[in-house]
Amino acid sequence: MFDKFQAFMNKYFMPVAEKVDNNQHLKAVKSGMMGLTPFTILGSIFAILPALPNMIGKNNFISQFIINNAELLDLPVTLSLGFLSLYAVMTISYGLGHYYGLYIPGCVGMSTFAFVMLTIQFKKGVPDLANFGAKGLFVAIIVGLVTVELYRWCQNHHLSISMPEGVPDFVSSSFEIIPTAMIVGGTFIIIRGLCLGLTGALPPDMLSIVIGPLVGSMDSLGTVWALGILQLTLFFFGIHPSVLSGITSPIMYQFFAENVEALRAGEAIPHFYAPGSVSAYFGFTGAGISIGVVLLAMFSKSAQYRKIGKLSLIPCLFGINEPILFGLPVILNPVMMIPFIIGGNIVGQLPYMFMKLGWLSKPVFTPPYVGAFFEGFLTAGDWRSILVNALQVVLAVLVYLPFFKVLEKNQLKEEQSKDDKKQGALADEDLLDDLDLDF
Image (cartoon, rainbow, N blue to C red; front, side):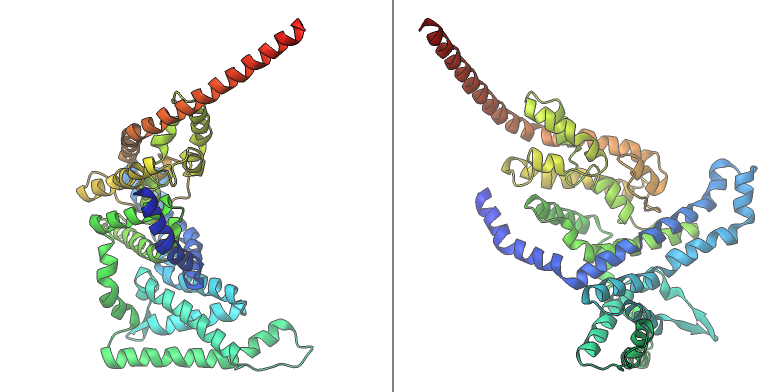
């Protein structure tokens, strides 16, 4: 049964996953989203500062400094998370332009112009930059990809100005793309005019209506549950779940930015699905909550398993679980399929249910990876996250225990068989030595 399912995955899923993983557009989106990490960390740190006076009291130097400089301290939040989509169009166009070997300043400059053209609004002559934040993220993705493709099309059709030899490269490169800039700029000017003329709305508002249900479904436990099963199934059969990040990352970052905006406005935090919470809880100690099998291996009766468990512990605490996944192994091991996929998904997503019930705070910070337990605490500053992670450890051990015992029993038989063969070989050597002595 397992062999047939493995063959099915290799035949139908592996080729699709490889195509998705190698798709240059999704790669550009993934790298672009990763490029936003410094901005999200900076913005979320400063977004938390206004809450400190309520936590430590107002009659101290730190609180008074925060209160008296509220406008200044709020600026990093506005200029990071409030401009998240603007930075996204730059990083995405950079990634795709680099893949094609195009002139990077041209890619970034034209895509930024195109994005601003489709998103900026004017209210009584004053620019309204509301679409530069999370709301415009999907427009930024589309604009970044389309602009670079238009640029490449122009290059392939030699729609450029050739400069004489001897002109510095930075000068000639800028002049060469003037026709391209006119085509790209004209295209997006026309798109803006058509959107406003036909619907009276700009693309961010139109996309919100079209893809709103899709994005909103990711705030559902059922949808995230199904996604988790898919990710762990892919990983179990050797396909890294990062192939899906080109689709999931924009949604997570949009939710995260909306959470920070709610925090600043003093409103209830709306979303549980964000980069920090996914890493701190679903990815706790690595995919499948592998700390359970690491601890079982450390205290196993099998000498080989104990060695693997001890070597895997420290990496596992920092989310690196390849030593246990491939050393035990867990990956492609029929015995471990159920605890890794089903058990790992249940234990990994339990904190999301706690957030929905109000038993655990929702994420407002995306920390750099600082190790198990600390990361969960930093995502929302909620001490209960430590208890939740501890509960995950206990549940992971219980989930893996019966399946691990099956592996351990077989491993002990193999080790005993090897010992018996070794003892037999030693006995034969002793017998030969005695015969030599008698002779």
